[in-house]
Length: 377
Image 1: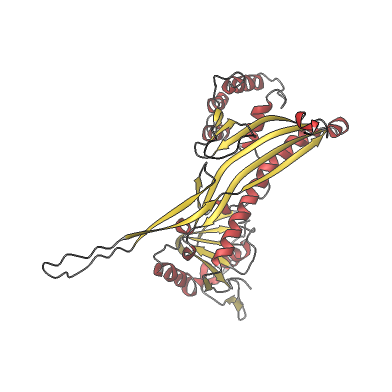
Image 2: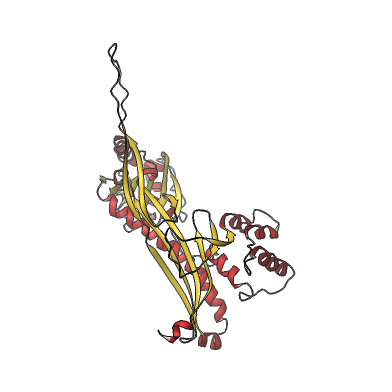
């Protein structure tokens, strides 16, 4: 056995259980299977988020999110109270004094100079699971209600149905490291290290949006629907060539009605959205073009199409295509546990912060999503 294995040390190992929204102390040597036991809770994510949002003027409310346990060194509510008290009294609190709490709140999503993380994970419902392999069942039916039954005739039974898809939630991860040398020669190296750890969580969110995009684009191609160019113009002065309200939206409504689905979401890059709202048929003839604000990474109502949300995100691969769907039926996000820890290696003179998460987007019903081509030239 390599002698350096004895020198590596795990610091502040923590794990987020998405089912109960709590972060616990962790043992990275334990596998995440059906025998894993979550022990010594640190903080409740929901209560912490509400306290951090500023909805309550009492700064001590954040302490309510933390737990005290019986195990020595795991009275986190007391530590949080001490930390808040010192902060209120003007003392300087370093990350080294409360390193576990600092790592924990970073995992909860402390944002600094946010990276464009995308909004695509908002499209589908998230299924929180602590089991990384399983099946997702979709219930349906073939029920018939018979009319004009003959006297003495009992209706024949019709049945429900179900379909299953296998789900395996894969592991993803990222890490940030700092060397002993960097700490010695770079002013503010520790602060930059902590900043990069915080930004790593944004990178995780961006990665998950890309996973959703990949799932949408891969499956939607099986249901192609011809669109219209929102920005095409004709004549002098130029007016919009196509009216989406007559030529596209009704076609998509009929497409989903025929599949007993509801058209309630449209996804595209930002440029098609800008061209749509500027279309004469959308804004009205003789009406000045609307002021264009940055719509990227926003969920928008669609003018002229009630009940459908337009998810605008420049993470989508192409400008010329959009994706229409029944967002309640088409896909699901499966979120498993998220682990984080710091490992020191004196032999290599490094300290490394590691985050590992489990996330997958699965299109559970490919008939409930369609690729709409030609919406931008």
